[in-house]
Image (tube, rainbow, N blue to C red; front, side):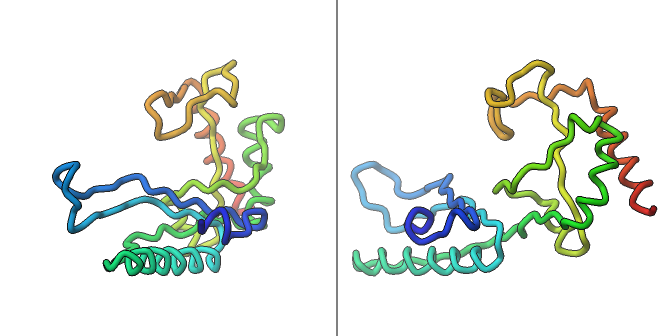
Length: 173
């Protein structure tokens, strides 16, 4: 409901995933307690705050409607991975030198959570992908990260080393 009916997805995406549910000891006994865990991904701080508030309200009211209680604890909040636009403009030529202009694409936002976001909360930063898909593979058919079939072809790690070296040396110019 929160994502499909209460969010403006054309302005800022929202992903709410429940990936773990634990409760009960047998299939025919109603448990006293149930724990759910998952991820919440947004690209906007205000949207994130609103989503967290709505999750708490929704869980509490559903529990109340059944004569129960709900406690919502959101323990870890990885910040939003944000690319500083001025830094990206300055560093894209460094990536193009390393990989070739035809191999550098600027993409729209993605909702993946990334610990790199902590750096960006302290100083201007940008996150970029090096790629590692086997040569000739169709990107649309390549397995996603965090799946059993994901595979990295490390034959072009030299491009990554060049990219990082270029960024370091070009940043000071």
